[in-house]
Each structure stands twice: as structure tokens, then as C-alpha cells.
Image 1 (cartoon, one colour):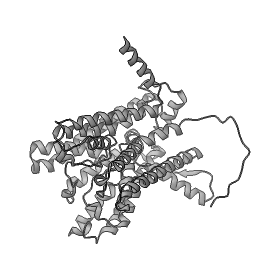
Image 2 (spheres, one colour; image 1 turned 180 degrees about the vertical axis):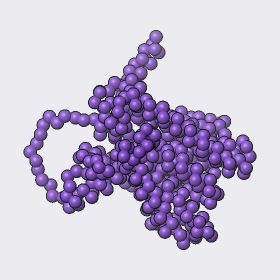
Image 3 (tube, one colour; image 1 turned 90 degrees about the horizontal axis):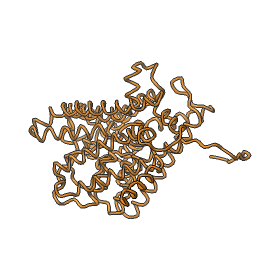
Image 4 (cartoon, one colour; image 1 turned 30 degrees about the horizontal axis):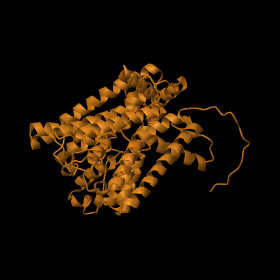
Length: 449
């Protein structure tokens, strides 16, 4: 009876947690369980310590892709299956939790917060939330199945049926969930000029990164005029960012013999540039060595990693819509306009305040993390900044510094990965919670600039 009473009391305490705290608790539980499973003898070849297993589990659950061990070499088939399962849970979990945390988990929250969640997800009623979750799983499993079949046409002839099929499944799951985990230590560099890999893998993480709200809108509306403002901004912003990164990477690295210059034909260089243009926005795969890129390319890549992809997607970063609103707000300021206009719709001050809050918190997180790591690790500042940006954007691209970090540095990177994945949704919950002003003060003036 005492045990039952303890369990009941613990359950009541858990249910009393706020939705952000509950969400964070779920993710930490996933990470802890994954770390224990990866540390077991049948999951690794004996060279993986608990901190390495915990780091790998955190990277998988947050669908980041940063590693301190060789995923394909240090983990057995069972360990690799565990990692793939963690990636799937982490990639789809945050979306399902975002939908269910106020409706399906029985968390006692107010109607106003449920209405704000419905509005943020662009749904017309609460029933649509469950319809969105259903579509999430259908799209995810369908895309991963199609990706597996197409990748198998490349991997099976080279690796055989058993290894080739497993490599296809693993990389399809990793790509769709924007995880960036690869079973090869050099990621996909051996397939830098393979047309199937360069088409299938980017399509998977672009679809996964658009956001399921966008995919649902595309399926239901199908016409540009009927689509929501969020969908229009996401599609336009994604296209512009991909085109910009494609042109810039090709221009900056064309003559670099360690990257694009290593390929003889201009067609191969354009193909490699295409892959590097889409992967920084949280995908994490690479077909060139990022440790050899120029400083300008590294800075551009870090910027893309911080922007990320779409809301309610498998990707991280501050999100494309956040970046777009920042640009629109800046343009409106210089044009002396009091409201933002885009695609025949207006955005109020509330949206701008949300964007500013998210951006400021993100910048502070990145700078504080980089400061701490710089104290404890004597390495290249560029490489450290790259790793922190990659961790926050849950990207997984690396210049090789992560594996060289000490215990403090690895703990900081894990914290950044966790915040980069769970933080934006947690912050969004607080931003969606309205409070009534009881006391008003007389206006004041502050001189800016």
C-alpha cells in the first residue's frame, strides 16, 4: 500500500508540472533510457564510456548529430537500432508533444493556453490537432520508406542486402528527422557526386524541415492564394535561403582545393555546392570536410545553422519565420511603418515581441556557452563557435572540435543541444501565455542609438 501511495503522490506531482517542465522531463527520460541502453555490453564494442553514451543519446534525442564516438564502428547493430529509435522519438516526439501536451496528456491548463496553442499551430479547432498528429506519422513513415527504397539502390549493390538495407533505413530515418547521424565516420563524403544520394537525402531533410503545419496546409489548400501566411513565408524563405547558400558556397569554395577544388568537373562542384547549401539548416550531413572551408564559408554556415528550418518540424534553430519577421520588422522601421505587411497580411507588435524574445534568449545562450567552452578548452575559436552553433541549431555539422572537448565542454554542448531542441517550444509556451496588466505607469523616454 505504501508503494502505491508513493506512486500516486509522484504521479500527482508530475501532472502538476507546467507543460514546458513536463516536456523537458520527457526528453530527459528519453535521454537517460537511451544512455543506459547504449552503455549495455550488447550495444557497443566495449570502448564507449557512460558519458559518451549519454552524449550520443542526447544528440540522438535532440536530433543533432554531433558525436564523440564512431556511430558505425563503436556501436553494434543493436546499438545502432537504439540510436535510430531515439532519433525517431526525438524527431517526431517534440511535434506530438507540442500537440498533445495541452490536450492528450491530461495536463491541467487553462482554455486560453489551449486556444493559443491552436492558433500557433494554425488549426481551426481542437479536433484538427489530432488530425495533424495523424498526418505527422503518415508523412514521416511514408517519406522514410520511400527514402529507404531509393537509397537501397545505391547501398545494396555496394554493401550487400543485409548491410545495404540497414544503412538505407538508418540514413533515411536520420535524414528525414534532420539528425545528421551517419554510419560512416566521414558522413556521406564518399557519395559526394552520387546523384541519387544528392537528391534523396536533401529532399528528405527539406520535407522534414518545412514543418508539418506547412505540409498539412499544402495538402489541404493546394493553391497559393488559399495558403496561410505561415506557409507562404516558410516556402518563400526556404527557397531564398537555399538559393543564396547554393550560390555563395559555390562562389566561396570554387577554387579551394580542399573542398570544391578537389572535383574536376563544374557539374560535380555544383552538385556538391547544392548539398552543402541545404544541409546547414539542421540536416547535419556533409559531403566535404568542413574543417577545410574558408572563414567566410564557416561564418555563412553558422548563420544558416542558427536560422534553422520550420516551426513544428524535425529541425532546430530560431526558425525561418522568426528570421523573416526580424527582416520585415527592420524594413518597417526604416520605412517608418507601425505594422508589418507580408503577402497581403499584417503582423502586429505581439509577433515582433515574440521574435525579439526568442532571438535574444538564443543569442545569450550561444555567447554564454561559447564563453564557458573557451575557458576550459584551448582550441581554435572558429571551430568552437562552429560546434556551439551546430549544437544550438541541432545540426550536427562539425569541424572536429566536439570529440576533443573535455568533460565540461561536452556537458555544455549537451546543454546547448537540449535547449536548442526543447527551449524554443518551452519559450513559446510562455510567450503564448497572456497576463493582465493590473498597474500602469506613466510613459517615459529612453534615448536609443
